[in-house]
Length: 305
Image (cartoon, rainbow, N blue to C red; front, side, top):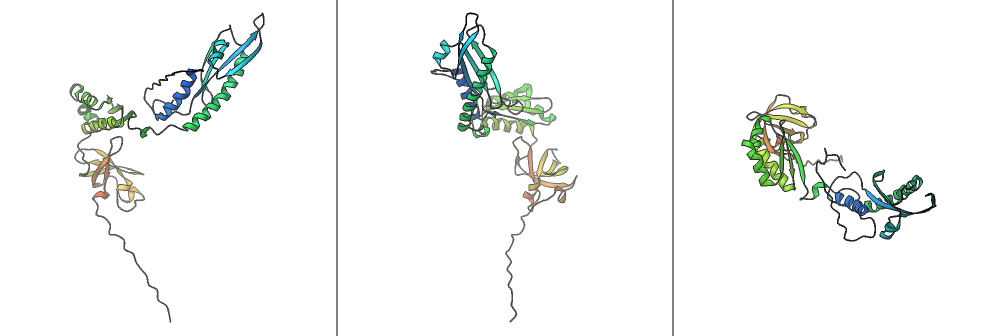
């Protein structure tokens, strides 16, 4: 499974077996791996399971005189056999085992042999799973997939996000179906059951937690930081920070931000939207006149006669 830092969701996989003549638990491992990948859960690799059984002949002293292993045991073999050894794992190794035995014990060499059989069978099943679905689907492909995101709100504006006695947060949760957590640091986390729910919650949080900056409006700002990819501009009236991307500085190609801008420079910018984290995006070129269109030039050559 992916680490919680990259996929902070609790997952529940339900496998309903309507009928079987084999290991339904190992079937659940294989089908569960496919289901998670199909749902867009970023599994690092497929997981497959196989069950290995054994029938042993013993002498009067309890020593094993002969044995036969069964890979992917069926119901009859499970009933009459001496062992049900379930082994699950990836192509890199074993992730889980379960051993059920009827005699007092199974010799270690037989268990090692069973692991070898299980490994060969697991690799075969993994190849089949990979041929069906090689990698997890893109999580964003499904509109109904749960969403998680965070946005940082200025501490002075947290009260607007929370509302009196938490009334605004409760209103957002009630209207959108999302669950919101607000930290003292200003970080607001949103868990939502769908893309639509997440976007609605994000919009409500941003409306409350970001000073009034409207898309399409022009503002006077000052360059407070210069990066390779653009400049951070602070608006004069609201102290709102936003990114002026290098591609939005001028109509012509800008090789370096410092070719056009300097620290502390005042300039007019237009708000052109927000990125997925809710940060404001500015444009300078949207307020600049378009350059004159290029005209084709023709050259006539003359000859000497």
